[in-house]
Image (cartoon, rainbow, N blue to C red; front, side, top):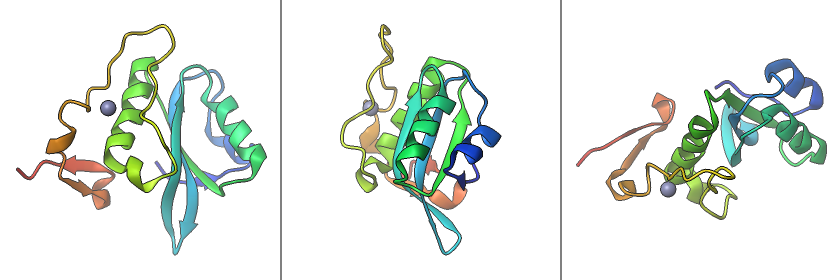
Length: 127
Ligand SMILES: [Zn+2]
């Protein structure tokens, strides 16, 4: 996910309307993207990002389209367990409305002991 400028133009250019997806908001320092907040939209990722763009809090975003609501939820859960304590996110991601989906990472969170950020956020289990 390469970062884009968090402006209405940047959002419209890089995110299709009407899709579920996952996003990170942050800023770029010395060429590196730092995530301050992340989230998902189950219905319209573009609309969600346009709202964030209008409040001017963050300068850049990354976004990834989801295959469906579950896919978006699980991407957000993964970020929560990997780096939630380094962001301004305060609570575990909520279930999609009307679903009984459960976070797949709560049960083995303790086994995640190392994050290889150089490898695009893919975690390594070293136990
Ligand atoms: Zn969880």
